[in-house]
Length: 603
Image (cartoon, rainbow, N blue to C red; front, side):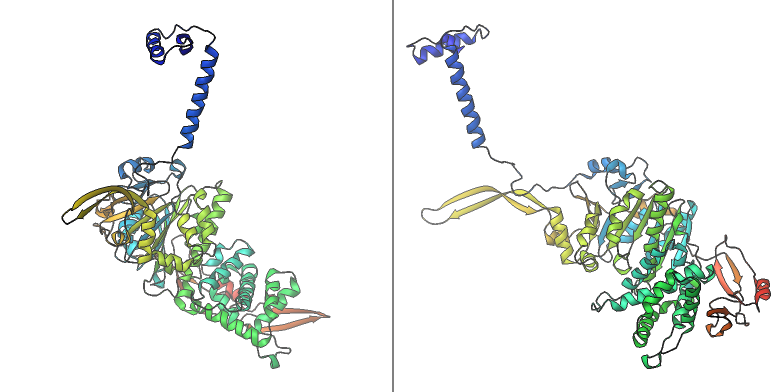
């Protein structure tokens, strides 16, 4: 078009007039000798324009120069995560819900709950989610508060209630760790976990020889019980009995001496020289007499709790049936004291075996997913021993429909437990719920999690005097969404919610009295639950078990170089012992069997 308007010697203003006329009929284009030159000139100018644009281009984000943090809208966020069935949700706050279908919103259901004493970790989070009655539960329950309040509701909704009570062992159901040992390596894992969780956190790191030797001894005795003893003797009380009868002597008196347990293992070695228990026991026996004595003392002290009659009885049988948690609605309450954690390692053993049993059941019986999801509410997280591979478990449980709620008072507790890897714990919890607190490192962590926003600032300057003046400057600045002191001053009725991939939310804590099921709990109108067993049975000891006096071992026959060892039962039978069990355990009286076998040698 420009070429058609151009003539040699034409003036600029005349050319512009011709272009104005030509624009009235833009489709009328004529070609002449200037057309090619005009195209090349305009292409060159176009390329120059692009070059100038990119050379002067700036990375501008107006209003976000110092940070883009801002509060999310609870009403819009909850629509992406809430299940339409109100009972198929995790309750986070008064208005925020997280649906149990993790495949839908693609977030795991692990929740880290942080709140100081009195912030409402139990009332505003743990209890409301138990009241949902939407999963099976394992609950660490300080003082038994949740058991008393929520159990009536759970029973009405078809739950089987089990209680592992460390405050009142006489009212506890039975938990025998031997029942959940499926293979030999489980013994090593259990003993390693037990030793780790009974070693004081601030203890100096001594030579690992002692712990490894203790593992060898304990695992040898447990493997012997597992493979050679009758089921009723596969208990930690029996393990203690064997340790007591494994007493050794000082080096100078060691020659030729065999303890009753030495003789027991010698007989097993003669019969099964490659037995795993024998091989483990040989590791222990490599220690000299004085060293072996120290190992025995250390093992006995560590397991001393099982000498207490209440603990021994509680762990002598099992009716918790942990492995079927994901197959039916069951709630296991681990009632622990809030002022003493001496026996809390027993709950740690339960955690360890629960994860093993649930993983095995999901992977081998249900195609990788449990039919009923399992929610583990870890209140007093810092005071209960954990599996030594808890970080890995936390990262892999989602696919098996297992979730945990980690409840702590402050971030300092988490950092003390996992000194160099505490961020792995927070990283594997897609949701963080902050209820308030008074610990500085937690305030700092929350403030950094919230991020910085960009704000508009105005500064005014006034110069006084004969030639005074004033000026006003407007500029942007960065500011934390909540500073440390603002986090500390968070209203006691509010909570902060962080969900992976979403802006932070602030919302009211959940009002437990607004839950539809409140009337069926002790916080409403229901009578507080008191756990007790409905049936008792008498158990007679067999005429001979390895629980008898091992001094009654006698050599009866020598056949050439082969020594055959036989065991005689102690003719004095023990008195009947009353054990409390569930309805599905039947009373058995084996006194007749005792009479028939009382004087028979056992090989």
